Image (cartoon, rainbow, N blue to C red; front, side, top):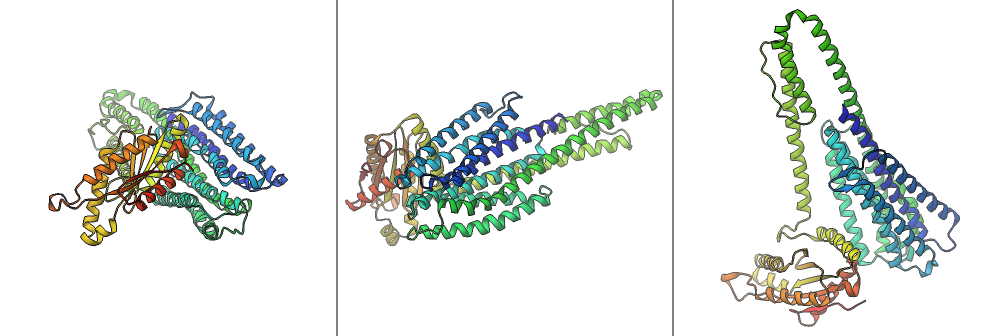
Length: 549
């Protein structure tokens, strides 16, 4: 009963945590609209931004007040109080960056400054996610039956955040009236891919038998109609204009006014799942109370009625009942190893023992199914992030992890270098020796790259015959030396081995370092790619360092 009541309290805190993340995400709408407004800002736009910030602050205060009366929850090394302070500090810094851009006349706001302001707000939500993840884990530990509902609510909240992030990618282009840059289009494609993945995961959870009520299904139907219908059509329209001449029918504020409301059904799914989890916990609390009352009353009645048959009761009722009660308590804590007594007669006690034994068996099967489901989900996630041929991370996995490394590099001020390498004359190799030889060439390059990587470095197959590496604690000169070692090692490697030792491959490399280009992943990739093509044009089988932009 204590676990059920504790889960109710933690569910309320989790709801407040998700609400705080939602308010930060919602604040980006009027923020993006304001970034596209001229000075002086329209009163309606300024009021909308002021109200959005006030709602965010209220959500943060409500979460802090809910957590404060209790001991700080530390889950997986996460201190809730400290994490909340970090998120609030990041929010204040992001708002200051937005206000700095808003203070400039519209024509002086560069696309880069607008993007920095937008992504400063975007970076706040992952900090709050640490808080909600810790609370969600605590809820599941308190009462495992709500695990699917809680995980589904987290996925819905993450889907809403990525939907908002997708809209934010459009802001700079809409404000400046420019076509989408390559980096912007890459970010849009990456975010849309993550949205598709989250959509599949939510749908997978909604298909679990006896885990979804009609209200959740109805809410998800609205998501399919509005966000994946109406909002997708709006996104496709603006995207088509951004890939053309950059003449948009909408301003940033107008786009937000049409796009943001279509994301609201996603929050309805989140809230429906949380309500479903709370209802399960409440029912469990009531059921536990009824069982306790029944057990006490039954025990008193039995002691009164059977006082004259103490020996029989001791051996045929009390002792088996005590053992069965311990087994029930253990079962409430997911301990399935508790011993159950063997019935001494075919009576009611035997039926109770049989029922508990059946419950243990059913619980064991349910846990096995849940573990298998989670294993399959994790396996699907791993497969989606790994290149099937080389075993290296793929483009999406590299970008996701590289952003985290670059954020640390910028925070702690250490140099990084990005290397882009492309196999020379790869098409001719395929055409002359066949695709099997081309695959062996890709595997050879991947193996050499692995042997050359230092601890803390990253490598991925970026597509086709192109690979990308991220070197931590590496300046321009060190990056060039590493590139030369890698180039020489690949040139010395055999593609077909003893079958044809004369077949060799070479690569062209481009190097970009943070010391000259900063810590922006898109800028480093673009510069390294351009340098790689310089190496191609200069005769191949060489490394070229990118110049400062």
